[in-house]
Amino acid sequence: MSKDVIAVAVAMYSKEKESLDKAVSKDIQIWANDCAMRGMGHSGSLTNGIWEREEDRARKLCRYFSETAIELALRHNKALTTETVEAIRKQAEDIIDIELGQTKASVADWAKRSMPGLESHYNEQYEWAKKNYRDDLEREFTIRSGLAGIDGVKTTPAEVPTSALIERDFAFVTDGELRAICQRDYEEVQRVEIAGAHKATIVLCGSLTEALLLEVIQIEEAKARASSKAPKRPLERWDLHDLLEVAIDLGLINPGAAVLAKGIKDYRNLIHPGKEVRTKFHVGPEEAAISRQFLELVIRDLAATQRISPTVFAPP
Image (tube, rainbow, N blue to C red; front, side, top):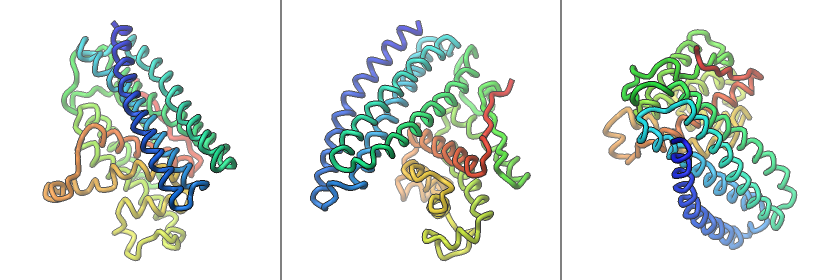
């Protein structure tokens, strides 16, 4: 059964890949022409733009395959077996290698023609992205393995078993009370995400991300206020966008996180229905997934800044 599911998922992914590859290739050509017109035909901005477009393409395709395969397996069996989870994981790892390999080759080709000195930089970006993708996959399938063998699909957060959750210790959070809140909210994020509560996932991810950034900014308050990105208002009135901009400027967060932040920075608008209507904020599985990925990047980078590994383990 798992072979049949994977074969169908691969076929669907291949069709999606063909379409997305063409769209991204066209977008890159438009971007390159635009850069040439502005005198940036041989610049880091050109290659950065190409990397962002190619890496976004790879991310979408990798996620498309894993989500499609899981959905197909659930549709056929109503539950995931450990065997199916492992088979999907193996194929997903191969697709990560394929898509990021294509990204690396495309960017290297453009870099050779425009900025040869940047090749080593994008080799590093490739290694970082590959590790990040595999970490995300491992997290996803740790959760799915915890759900394997459970009758039916869980439809409410309360029904999600503890075995399906990943636990983090948040050792890099210095305030003990805040650390306990982070651990509680991180568990809740997983429950609502697994249950398919997209709005709750975005709101909780945004709230937890903001809390983590605010704590580290408060610790580095003097440096934060001296940053060129710091707003001219009290620290307690900084929003998620402000905190992220300053954290990036201080080297606490990888600049690449800013790309994902677009899907979460306005999460507060979802708390008020009126604002949600006015801003036309779209709530769906894609936005929820981006919010969760952004949260994971922030946790990873803040832990690295404190030289503490963000301990992850599935409870027994």
